[in-house]
Image 1 (cartoon, rainbow, N blue to C red):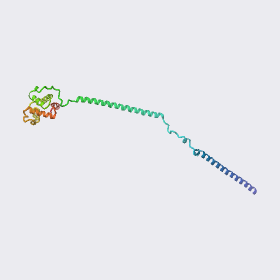
Image 2 (cartoon, helix red, strand yellow):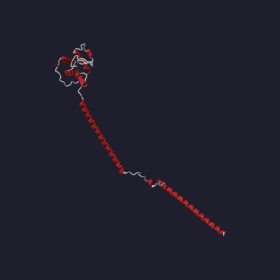
Image 3 (cartoon, one colour):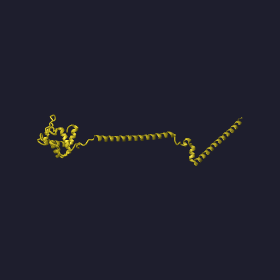
Image 4 (cartoon, rainbow, N blue to C red):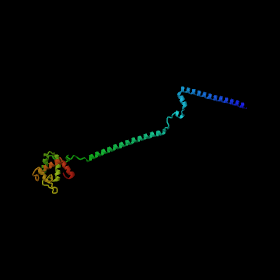
Length: 237
């Protein structure tokens, strides 16, 4: 019995040894073959080998041209809105320019009318009174006054203004006086004693009074017509 068991064990041990050797040989052979195939693929195509080692997914291999799809209708509507806004802005500017132009034209016309209506003749221009042909058309103190007027370099066209001015002030009276103001004489000097700068006979001599009066008019209003114009507008000269 013991001999039988020993013989059986020896047989089983041999079978296990043979099987282990066969399995080991198969494994070694597979590794060798796999190594050769890998070397062949790497030498033939490195990119292929890299691809085989690290395969790319289908989504990363072909990148998408655009992640967000373009809405064509929306873009078209936006472009039309911009064009409409631009047109509206241009029309508004044109309307504003036209309104400003009309306002400027109206203001210009109004200014022209105002200037034409309110413009008065120059202060020193003679009014449209009949011009005397000579001083001989006058008499008395007016005739003296006309002669002094011409001697002072004024034209006969100024005599009608001087006549009206001193008609209003004193009626050409050498003794005319105003007790409230102290005015005296033909030109109504205030006070009358001012006329002494021309002559000591200022109280009685019409020529002295007229000379002083013309000096005053020339220094203040340049001409008798200028003095008369001021007297008409303010009541005094």
